[in-house]
Amino acid sequence: MKKHIEKWSLLILTAFFAASCNDEFLERKPLDEVSSETFWNSENDLQVYNNSLYDLARNDDNVPILMGHYQNFESYFGSIWFQDEFSDNMAPRHDRHTFFQQVRAGKHNIPTDPQWFGYKGWNFVRAVNVGLANYSKAPLEEEVINKYAAEARLFRGWFYAEKVQKFGDVPWVDKPLDTESEELYAARTPREEAMLKVLEDLSFAAENLPDDWEDGNAPGRLNRWCALLVKSRVCLYEGTWRKYHGGSDAEMWLREAANAAKEIMDNGPYSLYNTGDPENDYNAYHRSLDLSGNPEVMYWRKYQLGVLTNHVQSYFEYAGGATKSLVEDYLCTDGLPVSLSPLYQGDAQIEDVFVNRDPRLRQTVLHPEDAGKYQYHLADGRPYPRLTGMSGGYRSTTGYHIIKHYNAADMIGKAYNTAESPAIILRFGEVLLNYAEALAELGELSQQDLDISINLLRDRVAMPHMVRGNVPADPRYTADGVPPLIVEIRRERRVELFMEGHRYKDLKRWKQGKKLEIPAMGIRWDAAAITRYPGATVQSSVDPLSGNTYIDVYKGTDWENPVFDESKHYLWPVPLSSIAQNPNLGQNPGW
Image (cartoon, rainbow, N blue to C red; front, side):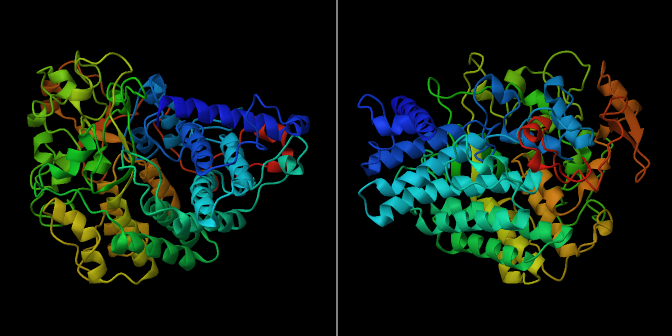
């Protein structure tokens, strides 16, 4: 969005905040300031006001829905790429990522003030509600007004869904408040009641947003298809949460998820990015600096020098590395898991890990032979992997360097905080996964459904199709208590959406938090490894399943013995400062 539009949008928003809190201000109707009495006159006014909502949503810490890479220095933590650090996918050790480590280990406490991505951003809700209270003042056709109201309601429903997923009950507010409003001191709205309001917002958005704003997806505004994907994502979360944690109407939510996804699949303009190159297509577009016109990318955040920049590529090392747990979830090329496939070559050395495996593994984790291909770490020519304690280059806590999003061109020759790596926020691949999972959870998934969803993802990387009724039980997951078909759909989701911000939420909604108690391990650590990686300062432990020794990332640290308390860790605690301001908020169970 143009700089002058952004500034004007923020000016308008600030004026509305002042106006809505001061009756005298409204009565005077000053000619030299923007007010709600004089502003709402044209479609351009509504569009400019909603631009201010996009501006507010760009703060990924306060409003963690349009997750991209928080701009400039703040991109060291506020990036969609780092959200998997809350889960068992990644193993950070950097001090600047301590909060991720705390949550992953179950060692976080009740905060005094809101934490990262936490109990804050309520000014965003107020901004949405101010708009919704005023759009109808414009002398426009109802269809035009509804278009902008739908945009605002998509934001509100999405924001509240994210808060429900973290905190359960929420303070639902659907009108502008002032300092005397009783709602400021009300109890939180129960989860199920709040989520029905969320569903109303998302359904309205999906019915009233345009199919195309004619903005060229560069990246433009959120359209109807984006609203349907958000609805599918939110409904899948809520449906599976209620199925596994208890709650009413789980089937209704799952059906809403499947229907929203199917609408995109049947009538939307999107398709998987696929040039017929299974060895490169999966990560090729994740590493591109310009996603305009990409058939799979439904919404993304653009960074451009002089407008909005980040430094997320240089902060890649903060992520630590991918875990042994993640790496072992990639199937072998016969479609079987490593626990069952005769093609699995083991992990005696890192090169063996990639043999006869799903091509997405080598496009996610750096193969030692590919350092030159990717010009890894500014094409420094060093051998990789490199481990904690070794001198020079990028170092990994696990030995599994992440390559999925790496783009050397966004680092070489660029000054600090001037990089332009984009962030994919919504993509068609997730639509296919949501559809398959929702139907599987309903017990209605057919082979045809698999062929138009998950098997398209497998076709891109030339992997065997998933065949309903012929899915073997992976002994590593029999304790999960779900059918092998659902295990495989969950595995596909983990592999396909790695480092896109889903894994931690997925574990919570599936009631699989205990997986976070499994130690975060890396590559095999034996005499050969000690010789190969001179100077490495790592700890190791014996894997009780295989009897082999591996890097144990958190051994000897505060996070060595992770815990997941089923009675409290599925929700985050409400900050003490928020409860002090409104004791009626109460605290979440167990905290």
